[in-house]
Figure: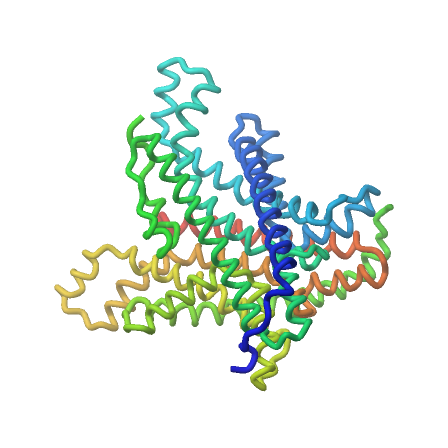
Length: 249
Length: 218
């Protein structure tokens, strides 16, 4: 088939590994930043003070409402002009854009999961005279975590799928390496992009597996039954989140 | 560096035009394609035709887990090898449509599976004709479940139209970046893009949340 004939990967292997490293690096750092942002904003949204709640809400709606591509371009092209300060490593621009954008989506996950912990659990904490920190760390969070993990896993997959945006701001990620291979006219466009697709698919599957592992661990802490990995790998994540919260604590 | 209002007003019409003529039109066309194709995928998975069902399921899973830019380049650069040359805009609509069809298919499936078995059994007991079962019993209940999710996917697709900058579709963000590059002023065009996105997607997502609560209590 035209466009699918094989070619020599050998000369490219170093570049491919470097690209893969940048993609994974941006994914991991972006995810860590997103988790931090999600918890800060999500918890602020649950605050008792109107001002805190409102400002968190505005930040969340801002990052959810203005497309990720606009945010990335803004950070790369507009921010240095306004502040006079340029972020050293180009991939850090992408990490910041990914972290803030997906952090805002994650804030909704954090807020929703904490809200989903049944009210009597909170009342019991009051009855037992637990401090606020104790209540959150030992009662609310352990029950909210298994609810957060499946939607958070989906967000991480979305984040991975957005890393090729780095190509647009001249970071040599895996996608960019693939594009260089196409430009070098090795005559295997179909194979290159199919291969790229497979790598990204595998990265997503790793995230699915990790999310499953974390969810099962979080559930075991609550004395709930783990979910089978086959369910989530084949269906969508909704199958694993159908279990009601609560259980034994 | 200050905000130049004159420059902002000068470029605003071009950006708005790109938004209306490309971003919105592409979103609408891709939504249509996704709605129809998603239904096809869902039906194929539902009726379980050997091989075809497995292939479709695999395709849906794979497409959902791979980035849109890869799919864009795959279609954009590979098809000409087969003598099929399609424009950038068509490629964009096609890729976004097919990508989101894979999400829509899951939503449809979930909607139909959410109908309690008792409803099907009641239809059989009343020996309702097949057409009435779907038109009068299943779909009215399923639509209530799926409409908010579909709406949310449309909003995320709308925010992913700028991905088409990869194949230089003249949608809003591509145009804004072009203006920024040729004038060496990025602050105004990009900020305008952000504002337009915020003004259009925020009301849409509020409307979706309203719809969701209304349908839940209906």
